[in-house]
Image (cartoon, rainbow over all chains, first blue to last red; front, side):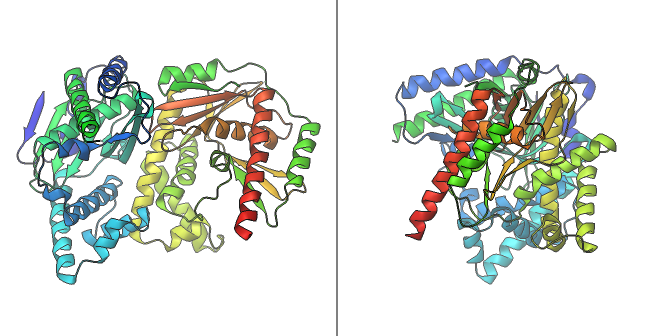
Length: 265
Length: 266
């Protein structure tokens, strides 16, 4: 089932959790089959040779197939995306945000120290910095309104990382899910994956949603309940129930990315 | 060697715990004396600290330690889970209580400069938020792993430390969960990222240090390393050959460290 919400519901988290009585039992059987599909597909592309440097697939690799010009990948766009991700982390633990831009920058610096993107932020002139600060504040308002309060009993975890080595290390899949809620110890599927983008939603966002679900399934061997993407630019949200078909489509997305990278070598 | 590789699933983890060897191996005074002799032969001017990470990096020095949300998460996360065992609450509330206690320690003058309490007390409000988020992630993950276990578990109050007598060397083994039976114990250790090629030697080093740190020299029957981000686990058994191998790797690491120090000085 696909749910498209043009205007945000009162609480995104409520929409993600849905009706508990309608949740399916956890699926622990599909992960092995998906892994085999990936391994077989990669073998068809690369063969048995060992690569000195692995091909890396992440959500941004899946976007590149479509986008020729993606404003979200510009420097201010990337900085804005990182800052909104930091604010989501604060919201996930119920922290109040007083000054969206300053708070986000402070957490970002504490997390990574110094990196190229932070240097680019520091190099912005006053006008660009003020423009970015206003932009971040606007995105934060949209996100905060939509998200509502996240109850602690739903076990929110933010910036959840996953890594999978395939084909003997020839291909590495990397992923970071912005927010994950639900318990993995339940007998029914309970995990919902939530991703925030500062761009309007497009086909790339759909690929990301699928990829998050695939990575979670490969990592934990348990299929998540739902995967969702929220746009802090438009307030739009897409929610998909996770099933085998969705995950098989993501396998094809990954194989297409591997094929593109391999032919570009 | 007894290195085993499994996917990190509930059934695989329980199988690793339940199928561990029944009888533990014991290190004797002679083993401790032999290790001391070897470390004393590799003297260094200052004090030396070795752990699984230094073994995995073959003695190459890491960046200088500094507190950050990432380095604070394990200390706070484990303490929060210990707190949850006695005072049922949400993970988030347990982390907040733990943070509150840490900051109170600093405010009342019981923390030294450079300690976690000291750093937290001077951290700005948004950074405390990020520390909370990281600690909640860690504690939730560890709680879920613990709840998977069929056996009774506990969160140890500290890592295992062993000071090698007269060799100015401190060994540290990471441990996050302990599963005890009447005769034996199995240790579970959680790490970020994915295991590299030297993850096995790292686990063996932890196994050896854990055995040395035990008052009677009793080794855990199995040491299980979990990498939840990669969804895999590795384990080594507490056999005498694995303990010897772990000790050899620790001494080799000390040798490699000294050689690098000499090269830098030259």
